Length: 288
Image (cartoon, rainbow, N blue to C red; front, side, top):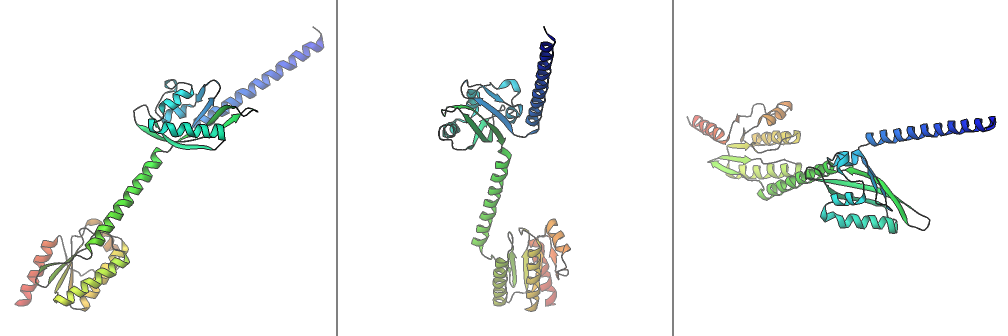
C-alpha cells in the first residue's frame, strides 16, 4: 500500500467517524425533543406498515414502550370503534387528495378509559404520487375538552337558574298583617333589581306594609347586589316602611361588611321565623 493510499484511507476513516458522531448527536437531539414534548410522535411506513410510536405517544394512553405493536394496525386497533371510519377517511383524504390531516378522535387507554386525541400529520409521496410514509403528532385534549364541557354545563345551569328566577318574577309573601317577605333568589342584575324595587314599593304602598323582610338565604351576592339592598332599604324608609334582613350567610356577611353602605342599623335575624317574631314584638310594643 502506498503512502498516498494510506493517507486516503485515514482521511476516509476520519470522515466516517465525523459522520457517525454527527449522526449520534442528531439522534440524541431528536430523542431529547421527543422526551421534552408533551405530544406523542408517530412515523408510519406506508409500504411495510411498520410504525414508530414515541414513549410519550404510548404514555398518553398509559402503555409501556413494549405494550404497543410497531405497526399501523396497532394504532387503528386502539381507535374507538365509532371513530374508526372517520379516522380512516381522514387518512385517505390526505394520502389520495392531499387534504390536511387534522382530526380528533378517541383512543382506548390501558385502564379501559377513552382519551380524546388531536392528531395532525403529513405524508411523503414518490414522484408518481404513491404515498411512502406519514408522520405527525398526537396531542391529548381530554382535560381541555372536559373543562370546556364543565364550562358549558355551568353555563346551562346558570341559564336554567335565570329562567327559573324570571318565571318566578318577584315573589312576595304576606307572612302577617302589614308584614311582607321578599325572598331574594339568585343573582340580582340591574334590570331585575329595578323590577324588584318597583313591585316591592307598589305592594308596600298598596297594603300599608309596616315591615318588609328581605330574605337573603338564597341570594347570590356581589358588590352590585349589596348596593341594590342599600337602595331598597333607603327607599323603604322614605315611605315609612322598615326593612329587615334575614338568612344572611357568612360569605354574604363578609361582602356586606366590606361595603360602605347605609345598612349598618338594619335589623338582622337568622331566619324568617326569628324575623317575623321580632316584627310581631315591635307591633306589641307599639300598641302599649
